[in-house]
Length: 399
Image 1 (cartoon, rainbow, N blue to C red):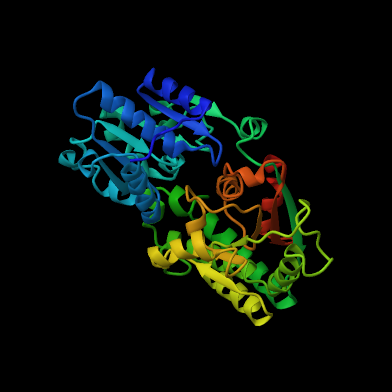
Image 2: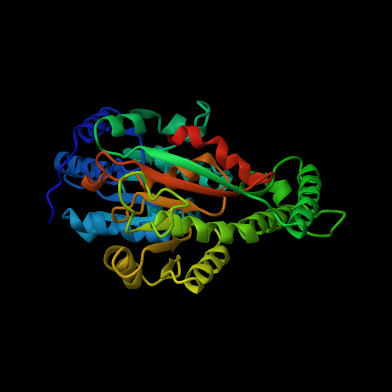
């Protein structure tokens, strides 16, 4: 069993929660929110004869990570369970599932605000003796149901983490590219179709759609209006994610970042990095990036949700930076996953929300002695005059 050593702000976060019992801890990426939750579970276990913790988290990969933390800090398997939001939503009307847990942790609690299905999870959370929300970016609307059930009682900001030496400053470097004429023509066609679909759906598609909209058939296409609109938006995102010019620019950037040319300053820290990551939410874009880089002499490895756990661990903790410099990562790189010391990243496809960008940049901000006094770099490859330009709007929030 590993000793649980808390940083001063983590101690304050634990105290704030215990004084409330139903609350959210808002802390910057890399601040150790998981450790805070483990410390609270320990404190509750010491004050009550039987404490069983349920953690609800977004992905299967994060389920495994939470299980590893409980094991690491000496919890018996009967004292906790970790499930995804999707599974929890399917168990909402099964009181026998929830009855055995007296401490519920909603990891990345902002997911509770992503549509009516996940919102139902709030009902058993209300009934739990203790409930904790964790997020770097909880909902901001004070009337949000999740915030009313789990109000923020403690906040630890990115500025505080930097001032106290727990996070590196980040320099965001936007790099724009132009679509080809053919790509631009298709992009404009899709934009027209999407606007029409949104109008016919009453302004909401996807998770935000109401149940009547989600089941409505579009009179012009004969297709489900929500599904059809979602397919159009995905195609448009994939189009800009896979724009030809991005991969030409990616090769140029990687050459410069690794110090192989003088076209791009390596990293501002005096020497080229031994590791850098490239992120996209589309695996096909990453596969294309890997093909481009490998064809031109780089060794790049791809990690996705389908990569076996043992191989993923080997690539992340052993081989990256030793056997190859460039790690290509998909959605697995978003929330809660820790990476070895890395101070340089490239985004080659845009995300839908500010929250996702904060989570991604958080991977550059982990507490690491090697980052003390250094500046992390994030290059954002975006297609000019497209939906990806919204990425640039958030640059000031990350610096």
